[in-house]
Image (cartoon, rainbow, N blue to C red; front, side, top):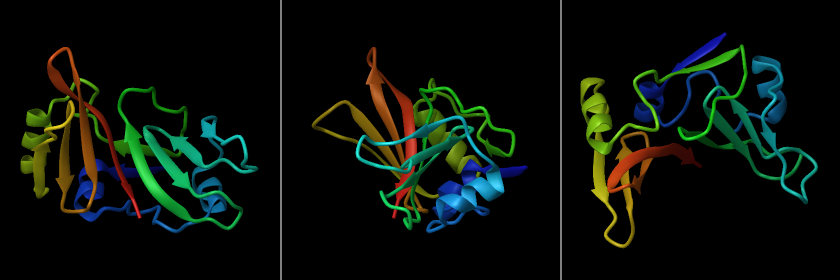
Amino acid sequence: MIIESIYDFLREGALKNIPFGVKRQFLKEVLADTDWVYTAVDDVLPSVYKYDVIEFHFMPGDHSGLVGITSNFITDAANTVNFKLFCDEWSAQSTPESIERLLVQHGVSFVSRQYAYDDAWEIYTEGDVSILFSKEDGQFLLEKIGRFI
C-alpha cells in the first residue's frame, strides 16, 4: 500500500511515490485498477482516475502523462486498497482558519486570500498547490485542493 501525506504534497507540490508525468499504465501497475474513472465523450481512454480521495488527471491521448492531482472533499472517496492520502484532519467542513492552523502546525508556508469578486477563498502553498473554499450559508468551507503542471 502507498500512503502519502497531504502536508508533503502541499509543501513539495508533488506526491512522493507518484510523480507528475507518469503514464496511466504506471497507476494501474502500482495502484491496481480503480472503480472510479472519468472518460470524456470524445476520448477513448479515461482522463481522470480516482484513488481514495485523490483524482489523477491526464490529457487526452494514449501517451499522455500525469498533469494534475486534485482532491475534492465534497464527494466520497473511491474504493481502493493500494492507496491512501493521510488527511484525516481535513473534511468538507474545514474552514480557511482551521486549515491555516494545520498548515502552520505542520510547517507549510502559504498565502491566503479571499476573492473580492465572488464567494471564494484560496490558500496557495509553497508547493504551488491551491486549496479552494466556497461559501455555504455565509461560511467558507473546503471544496478542493489541486495542482496542475
